[in-house]
Amino acid sequence: MAKDVDGARIAGLAAAAAAQLPMEFDPKSAAAFFDVDNTIMRGSSLFHVAIGMARRNFFTPREVAAFAMAQARFLLRGTENPDDVALATESALAFVKGRRVDDIIAFGEEIFDDSMVDKLVPGTLVLAQGHVDAGRQVWLVTATPIELAQVIAKRLDLTGALGTVSEIDDNCYTGKLVGAPLHGQAKAEAVRALAEREGLDLEQCWAYSDSANDIPMLSDVGHPVCVNPDPKLRAHAMEHDWPIEDFRARAHLRKMASPTAIATAGVLAAGLAVGLVASRLRKTGA
Image (cartoon, rainbow, N blue to C red; front, top):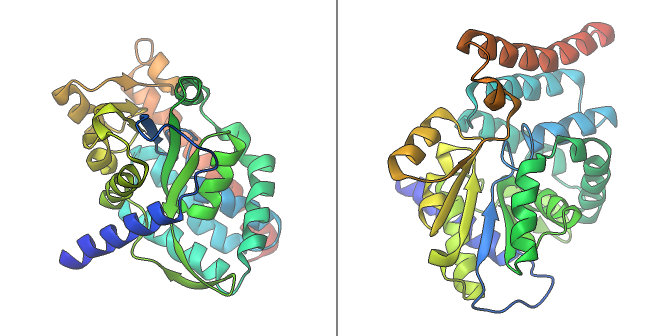
């Protein structure tokens, strides 16, 4: 347990240290912190990147199948499984080891423009833009590698991003992390460290997430908001009178469809992702 706490603390401090502020802000201004997966973007950002890598022959179909299974569980449960996060992190580390940072950034920009932009959640983007228009800093906070997180933030004209930090030597990835993935408690640590650096009053700040794993981050700000919440976070939000925003299509169908029909729709969506990869496996004989 102590090792996990230390890893989260190190990861949070590293993420805050790596966070880039592109312009000057009032040091007393408030900020808004947005989770990415299933909050500002449908599904797992790492999965979308994996698909983009496979299309460019960086991953084999069998490797992508593992990502697809994790994505299916992600969709069906509506939450983040630590094992899935670990799998995605390990795969990403193996891929980037020895590669140049500049190349990965360029690669991330290409994949975002090609296949991730249409996965964005319009309702959440409206919330983020409202904070931008009010002159607040708007940060993404995600377990996604910080280089990719910064690409997403830049493309959305947000302030910046807090993400998982990898070790870099001579502008190349070593294949190791600094601390742990920026997940759960590590996100809260990163937000606190950034707030201290920027002189932000967390009581005047907002945080948005879909996952109960982010309750520590949500609890640290004065204005927590649950977006597309998983069942555990929804229950916590109702208990603590936190606002809930649900932009999922199934949320609008709840009054017209039975729980069984809604669950079936989720299974079909996940099955399509896995089926696509399975079809590729059969064709390639991998």
